[in-house]
Image (tube, rainbow, N blue to C red; front, side):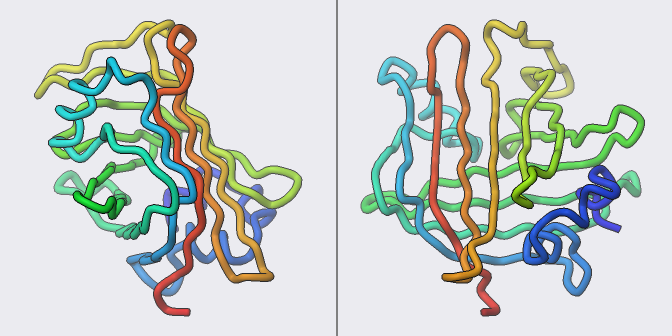
Length: 203
């Protein structure tokens, strides 16, 4: 059973059938898709140096633009401790450079959260909650976050967190998944955002 099916429980079957296939990993261990991000927003310019550093860790990046080609690979795997994991690889093909946004997710069923380590090597940790909307979309929100410094993890006060909101849906008419990722901060506003669509490589 995938970590997403386990955390959603009965809600999982309220997802659009294609989202069930995507997050259920029933017939495969890897999900691959290609698409386009209609909009990528990178936030305030004064965060440029931080995002340039984060880009080297395959996390946030300073580039922005419209209609940026995109590729995603989700791989279900088992970690060295026997824990089930899902590795996320997201690549954005800007005109002059490619940028990656990677993560490793595991399940904490006792807390009913997904543990999300962002970047390679990890730079941030975020706890994620999952729910299904009345329309059959998947909605993901961040909760507690920590800054990862090697073996040490420092809690980030709520006022300084990057609050993540993700909405993913499936549009039957064009056989595309639609995704909207929005990261905001109470003081700064939008830190990072992308919105677009993609189609599985096996269609």
